[in-house]
Length: 311
Ligand code: UDP
Ligand code: MG
Image 1: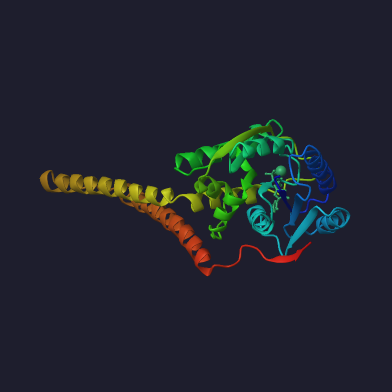
Image 2: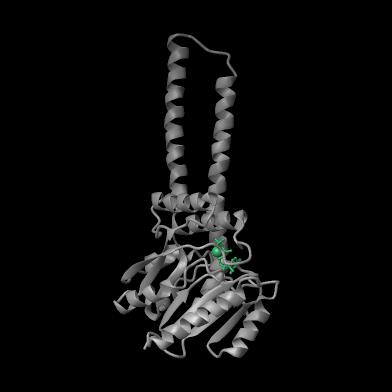
């Protein structure tokens, strides 16, 4: 019998948590009743340093139900770190990560378990419909997946962090110790037999998105820089193109002044390239700097999260 463990990251989710707890425990009881999962399957809520009543809610749920557990992080470390904290701490044969806001249809868990029984070690939850997201969110998210593909990074289109992983896959994931964590990029690199399950993405059940523009951009940028060094290669290519171009212009100017004795007293042709090249160089240095900053963070080997309490 499969021992299932659900991992639910929560950041200031007091508005949605009671509903999420009710929905997930009901589903667990159903699955236990149908003999699909073991009776001591668990649901673990990871409190990512919430400042509202999220932790007390988790505590009282855990007190009422032996199958509910909580991990309290000492500080808000972001969705990805909260997830990995949960995934690496809980026990179980099969782990499923799901958002607290019930946007990912918990009903898909049944299909995920079926794919697992057929031999898949990793099952991706794919958002088939995103009708409830604003067009802006949908457009930015989908452009991000396209850009990542274009850059040669292996990401699953329209899959976020709703996925099933077997114990074997989790053990493999443990070996990825990077601080600059982007799970959607790492998991496809593990290999194993994978499967996809499609579901309609609902609206947030309650509360507000904990992913403002700033966090979304930072996640996208982290994902990009952790998966590919293509931007560095682009800079090199661009540098080569500009160099060839300047060399050609130099030849042309020399030929003109020596053979035809023409010299134009124009400042535009002098000043424009200076600004242009200055801009390109700053951009280049900036991008290289971003990668060096990542190296700096990785070499410090700081912990990705600090656990304050486990119940
Ligand atoms: N989350 C988290 N830490 C954060 C931000 C978000 O643990 O710093 C959790 C949040 O509680 C939710 C999940 O990550 O369970 C996804 O966040 P949200 O629903 O706000 O993102 P969206 O669906 O709007 O992209
Ligand atoms: Mg959400």
